[in-house]
Image 1 (cartoon, helix red, strand yellow):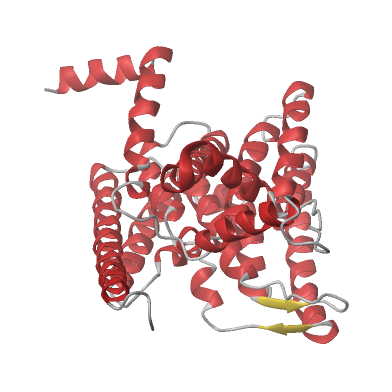
Image 2: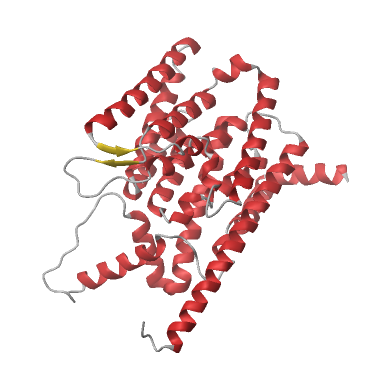
Length: 378
């Protein structure tokens, strides 16, 4: 048995085996996009309505109305409109969301692999839970797509070379067309990584302290200069595991289970490397910066002169924190129990999601049957 496992590992390590494994894993990762009659994401339907409304205006059906072109917050909408035109309203949105999920998952895994110096396949279960967590079900797909592209950028710039940096620039520009917030976060982390490689450990510690101080100053400045709101549950979101905290109280079990396994992996890392080496590691410092930003920055900001507030800032960015935590934990050598515990938590999480989505589908079916029986009269 052990010989067969060893042979399988050797085959999976080859280029052909690695590609086949990634393809099979991708098919498994996309199952939640297809296992229900309807794709559930709160803001997805409105995105489809925006695309239809824009096409209607541009066709001249409504005289006197024009569309305003934006440079950010549009990439997913453009992709959604294109896939919907080509494949219809049933298949098109699923294909667009599937592509977005794969960009995020494999971008996050590439970033985690580069930071940890190896491919921690056991953490793919955690990344999958984050991928189908709070941000996904809220339907913030422009942000989601931008963050996925930004992880590819960070994976490229972690190993500094002119070629990799040249490849990262157009991806970063593309990410900006989806959403500007992950791009700002990525530029800050990329600058931190670039400076960190050129200074001593002590100076890098000064950079970390300065970054945390700037975040604290930003917290106080936001409270005085602009209207903003802050809620205590930001502390839970700052762990990154808050992305799995959804729908109802049964997800508390998933949240606690994920944090417990992450805590065991972190204790293993402390035992294997020592506190001093961990604190001086770039992965730990990135986690500190991102966690502090989510914990202290307000969830809602209304800037002067703007009609719309920036909402769910901390909740969205906690998705990035979760992936940074995975990058840190990728440095640990996990035990067999911890590997299977992550798989068990992920299975419970996706079973909960499947059950809740099926319940919601049943409710929608009953509503449609009721409307059909009444002839569309409310």
